[in-house]
Image 1 (cartoon, rainbow, N blue to C red):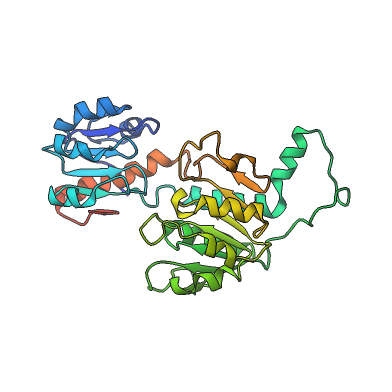
Image 2 (cartoon, rainbow, N blue to C red; image 1 turned 45 degrees about the horizontal axis):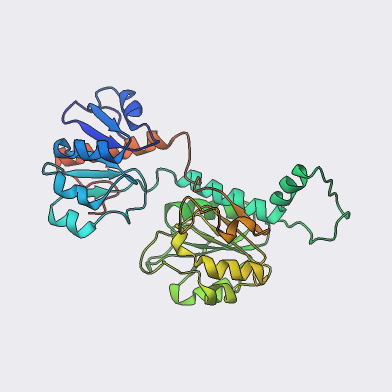
Length: 322
């Protein structure tokens, strides 16, 4: 982890929320920083930028405005907004923030899992209605323990590994799938090949999506995938919204071919008011906040400073994508 850095070229930051500049100021010897919060301001700083920290404000048209650009440090782990081929042709390095919020996302996924198993969403609804629903008072399924239940984690990267360890600690049976055939890194997790996904879906009580959005994962949870799940199983998505076919999910919940779902990400964000998802009773929704943590800026700056040092020394970049 980087602790100090001698001042050199200015770091330019473009983000509407995360205050990277304030975090850099805490680090003795860190490079100077200019931070902007709008796309128009980002356009103005691009001709001077050699090192840029950005994510959702990025547009690929900016590449042609940046003759000096050497490194883009993405504030997020997702890099689907970047034209990787164009960056490579310009010899501009791109690194993501993989791992910066892995603990937060894994804990959020676990919170959603617990909300579904204990149906905490029903309790909150009852609270708003001033309705007491004690044991045996309502005709409803029993509340569930996680011990002994099976969870399938699709995407055994940094987040999936962390979640797997949490689930194992709760006494769950854990299966995991990754795109690579490389053996999994967490002892006690049963590895599932991508070709056996539907078989594994049929064995799982909970399916948690923690995978990146790629051509292979886009629409992964489609009508056939939901049909493969058990009718009392639940889906949790803390990956990208487009990993799930939302029309297929809505149909699965309405037809009760699965028991419930919890989503943190959506195809369109913010979720439009007219989306049917808002009205589904067995759906828990959070607003793409799984990665939110008080340590986010700290963790991103750790990666950034490591990569600035790597540029200067010619050593490998951390989390390099291009």
